[in-house]
Image (cartoon, rainbow, N blue to C red; front, side, top):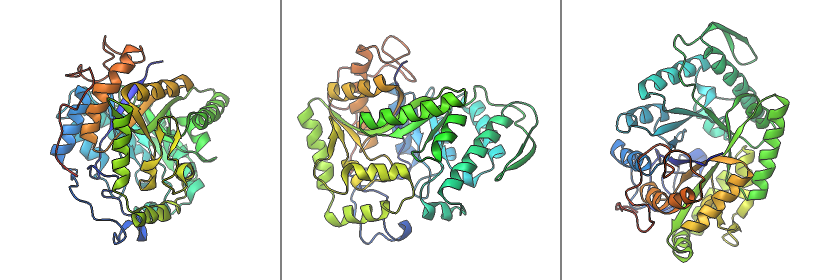
Length: 397
């Protein structure tokens, strides 16, 4: 079981601080409680292309593109980026409640042909009613997961190459099909920590994603989903979503983490915690519980830092340490059964180089990476694989 490394495309903006395009009050419309941000890098196609090309060069297999109000559309953005990359795959996040499953299946099939097989799908059910209602979705939490269950059944059904009928509570399809099914079929990634989410993963998905909780909590999730999948006669693989701050020494890495915290004033943290606390997402509540809104004891497990979650929704933890220490933690999660590591950092361009030139060679030396002699998964050998400072350092916040 090899480690698969993926990076992140910040399609809502990027920079050197944890507070960027996110807004935390009044449904994400007003920003008067958020500290003004200097040097934000807009998500223009030129900057995103820099990140995608760096990820490909550094040997990342894919990049995750988020979905939501504050992001550029993931389908359109990544389709454009397939034209400036050669091997990099795109883990496209989308919400099943705002698109027909038959249309989604058709879009995926077209994408696979246009990109020559470089699509992965990240199905995001959604845990914020305010956000869902912006897109016309008024179902409650558990019914959204029930709909996702039906959605994925339809998608897989119409990929079968023959007319497919389906009668459910949320979808009724007669003779649905994709005239040319995707080849290969895109892997489906999915996350959810609630009781309603588990059976959906067990029945439908290829890779179950968890946010970066301490290893013992991650093990409990793996055991839970694995048990549910076994009852369905299926096997599910596992992934984890984390940020990284990797440097030549542990001291340098923690100093970088401290600088990120230094940008956060108490009002900004309070506003973020107030808004995030309203989320219906069980996973989000688990993230908040790791730090309780306090700056004290943010290292919640060796080299696992919860400071990101003070202001950022979703993935709220980072691996912080020397390249060898970060590799140790990845190996620890891998020993639990995690194959896919979906990583990110602030800013995403520079942190891709820190990780790719520092941690990735460590993992390759331990025999954890598949692919070529250097463990190449989706790109060429890094220009420098000995660690050290990034090759590219852009200006910004």
